[in-house]
Length: 104
Image 1 (tube, one colour):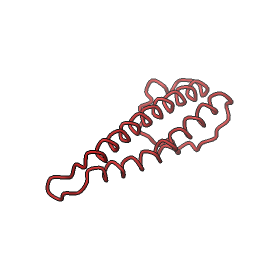
Image 2 (cartoon, rainbow, N blue to C red):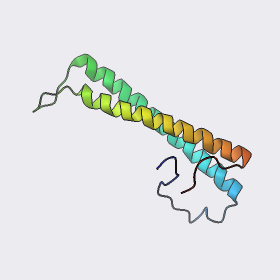
Image 3 (cartoon, rainbow, N blue to C red):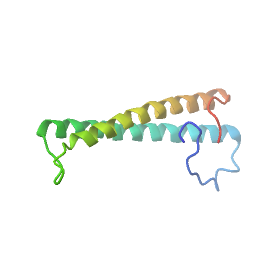
């Protein structure tokens, strides 16, 4: 979804903008999304360390809580890599006017 730019959008106000402005706007939001995903990943890492250190388990199954944080953190790392890649490509598109990532 991220690479193909298939997120849900409402382009009522942006449909009349010129292509260069649309590329700049798209690059801006890709950078914002990347920063948000990196922040979430950082907080998942902090939670993983906290639960890894205290040994807390789930109530009924007595499974270590850190397992779920480790799984989420692993997926978040992949999301970070993709988000940063897309942000760099969108900023490059805005700067050069060339298209590097697929459109829809």
